[in-house]
Image (cartoon, rainbow, N blue to C red):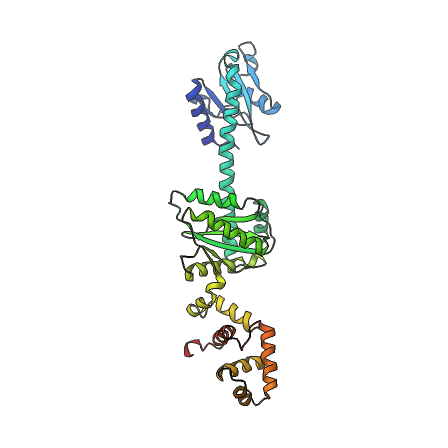
Length: 364
């Protein structure tokens, strides 16, 4: 687990303070780094014993013959999260260096801990970005992606909320912002990372809608001091294979929302974005969501009602039906879609959906 680069760093920093030769050794006895460069890549017989027992080993002038090609000194195990990851050797008379040996061991373990934690964190973030890129492909999810998700501890649990923020990797506060976001959600199941250009994603799983909205407000307050706003929120989805759609809507929210806002929800700009992207997947999803439950007769009724400027008597006559029948159909449309054709605000949504479905938007 200890790399050659890390081993050289330990030797350099430790020898700078002790002025004694230091060896950093793998658990198989191979010397990774040493103040005596001739010893690098050779086997340290004493370190092999330390790796096997997990206990310090003192090599003196008296027992030096038992460990070929070694020198007197103290060799100590290096642990990381209770796992033996290497051995550090201090060359010299064990009696003279015994007092500093424990301090060297603790210092080395601290350096190893910081380096390996940072390395694990970087690996986790890269894996998160890799998983997110696969989710963005829109392709059927393969078994390997679920294995990667398990490795990084992300829960495949609905609902899934996707957020997007713009960050410049060159900025001084870049890493601080990412660490702050990760710390903020440390008790939740999330993916965080860089996607494209300056786009950064935050994907949460299993959060109740009210809890999620509360957390977003708190996150916005935290990011405000870094000038990392706004946060755009995509449509909530209920399976991993829909996450790409959720992120796309978060991106649209950022594109069409007012940058002065700290939080922009896709629903706030959905209608406006349709005017800009009539043939988009969002437009198709919109018309299907609004009108998908209506049969042809009800759609024709809605057309006629709007063409008659919402005048019941005129529309009933035009359709050659009784006024009560028209009222019944309009009530049914209200029940099926959740939008009341007689309400001005709801009528706008229904009318735009009809235009989109007909492909006649530009002629209206």
